[in-house]
Amino acid sequence: MTKLTLTPGAVTLAELERLYRDGLDAELDRACRPAVEASQEQVQKAAAGEAAVYGINTGFGKLASTRIAPADTAQLQRNLILSHCCGVGEALPAPIVRLMMALKLLSLGRGASGVRWEIIACLEDMMAKNVVPVVPRQGSVGASGDLAPLAHMTAVMIGEGEAVYDGARMEGGAAMRAAGLQPVVLGPKEGLALINGTQCSTAMALAGLFGAWRAGLTSLVTGALSTDAAMGSAAPFREEMHTLRGQPGQIAAAATLRALMADSEIRESHREGDERVQDPYCLRCQPQVAGACLDLLRQAGNTLRIEANAATDNPLVLTESGDIVSGGNFHAEPVAFAADQIALAIAELGSIAQRRIAMLVNPTLSFGLPAFLTPKPGLNSGFMIAEVTAAALMSENKQRANPCSTDSTPTSADQEDHVSMAAHGARRLGPMNHNLSRIIGIEWLVAAQGVELRAPLQTSHALQKALARLRDAVPALDDDRYLAPDLGAAAGLVEAGAALAACRDVAFPDLEA
Image 1 (cartoon, rainbow, N blue to C red):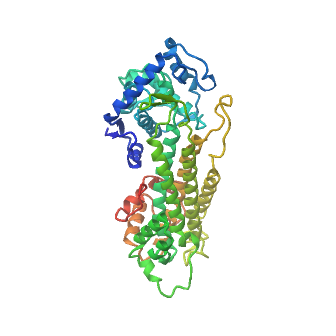
Image 2: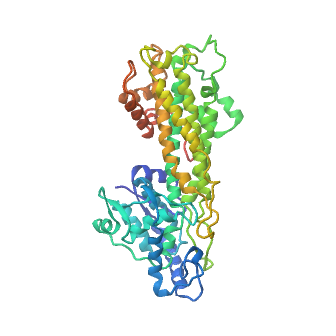
């Protein structure tokens, strides 16, 4: 498997997306090793000293005032991991767990955590051998780090917990042995360094970001196809109009829509003499809505990129000053806000796409298309209930888009009295993206049907490729048939980026632009 070398403090969203989507192994640039070892030496000195240093020779959280003898250090760290393995619910998908492991590598590689290089090597080897810890989805409130999820990851490193190896779920120690790996014995602070941090929340938020960005770009393709199907105007996409406003996402979305619709026969057929003055907002305001969503996703992406490069455990080892300082970098408020932003964008992309679906199946709005896009309305219902399904998914996403970051609750005997709720804020993004992909998939189906009903007029060359890609998987709807598999197939194409690949000659906005 291809291995990606990551530079702590300088990783890009593109690299993180490759790790997530392509299942790449991760290793740290060895240039970071001296800083890692310098911080570890500082921790060893503190562990042997008389002064109380949180998490090194003390208990944790509310028990921070309890001193721990040097002889009990290893037991302290082991107990920390086992006691924090309190996650519940289904296991996170392997790509998210592997991304979480890579993010933990990046954090440790900043040289502020005080771990031995052996800990980093263990994580790298687990990724290389595809030992994937079983990490339950629920149990983190996103402050003091993602304690429970990261504890389940760390448990496998010490030969405990559960992992998936070679397709089988097994006890963590057995998975390590089967892969030819030796569990580690945790030294001073190492358990705390591994479970303090925002890596689980950030991994889930990044997965949500990547899915939302792909779906958002695909909605430009299906939105352009819907515009042609409805014989809508491309005039609202003119460059001068969007330059006057200056919003970058809007400008980029309009440029892509213009490129997608260039040379459409359908568009040219009604450029003159069209009795309609303005299209509904779901067509006319696509650049404004989709562009604002893209801008929001870019803002969230920038936050998550910074977080992916951050040292977020506690205490942090400041090697230049020689201090070990207890603080709060584990508090995932930035991730929680980013997750809420992503959720808003997902909900809005689905909302406007659903309105385009509703417009196309409605004969009073679709400018001459048959009711519900069936050639034989009445005998056939066509896409009547597919539109209802899209409405149900849209409403579900709108409900889920309510902010999670504003919902704090005190924990740990009020020592941790304000938390971010980043973990479940990020966890909801996966189901929301699944819903969004199904909405956009339904739009692809109805827009393609509408365009085909405009024959012999043809849509643009770019959109013909998107239509052909859909027809490779789903035939046009003539008489009614069992539609659920068609909806599933279209959603799968959206999630795979098939429409974007089909329109590869068109320039789409870049996430890190």
